[in-house]
Amino acid sequence: MIRPLFAAGVATVALLSSPLCRAALAQAREPAQDRGPEVIDGIAAVVNGEVITHSQVRGVVGPRERMLRSQLRGEELAKQVKEAREAALKDLIDRQLIVQAFREEKLSLPDHFVEQRMNDIIRENFGGDRATFVKTLQAQNYSLGEFKKMELEKIIVAAMRGKNVKPVVATSPVKVDEYYRKHREEFTSKEEVKLRMIMIPSRASQGNAAAQKALAEEILGKLAGGADFERMAQMYSEDSTRDVGGDWGWIERKTLAGPLEKVAFSLRTGKISSLVELGGNFYILRVDERRGGVTKPIAEVRADIEKKLQQEEAQRLQDNWLATLRQKAHIRTF
Image (cartoon, rainbow, N blue to C red; front, side):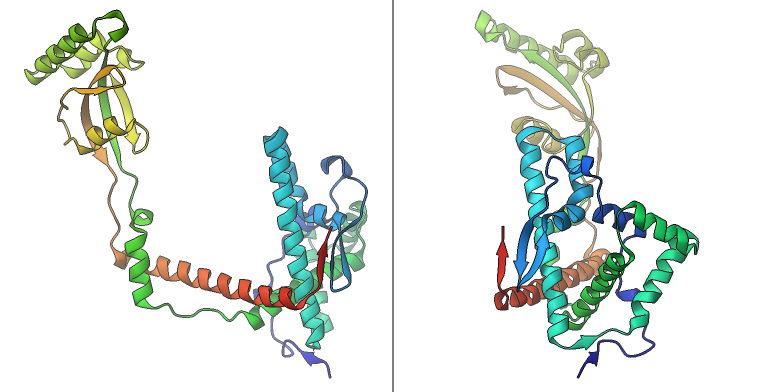
């Protein structure tokens, strides 16, 4: 007996995650010049006796590959293209396993589901013009039957996921609190300081280290006596910010060398540091402003954490379900 997966009249739109028609077509029938040198089709995998071809893989991965080829070259391009194709093949294998499970459970979908989905696509993307829709399919070398099959499989996959991966409706407050404690940085705004700095090189190789240190200490003394930091930087500093009075602008953590960062982020606003010796140079720092570094209270982010944990649990359940399907299947990849 064939069992219906949905009761008559139940809407399927909420279960669908299909892309727009043109995007789907572009993925399914990518022009040869965008696919690189691999134009010969062949078997990419066999899943319980059913074949997945290289052209199917390229159809899924095509847009991603085009983006990679526009941004990368050489070994890094080859590496990322390979990873993208492997991920696409894995997704296709999972889809095939889900469709096979649907058939094995003798489930069914009312015929009007796919027709309704097709009508929605034509109405939403082609202004209700079925002829234009069909011409678009033909221009992409894609038959109406193939497109219907693709949409049917998307409905099946979404429905089977809904049937086998039950939504997580509640998260333990204890788990939320634990996540907040362990990931406080996620809820803390980026800490920055507006920094000015004077750099005096030691010139140790020229035997002038002692004199340069004395100069730095003299500058520090003048600053302590009320000298203008910007003016001192313009006169004495020897780094790239000299002309702008040692102004480094807004600096976030992990920008400066460790010892300088430690000093900069420990200084109170408006205060001048002691002399910092680093890498053969002498530095004097002043923090003009501070911002960020504020952690949101848990009450403000609790809902976000709950949603994140529910999504992670749903993903775990889906992964476990798919792992079970794979364990029972005979899969060969080529």
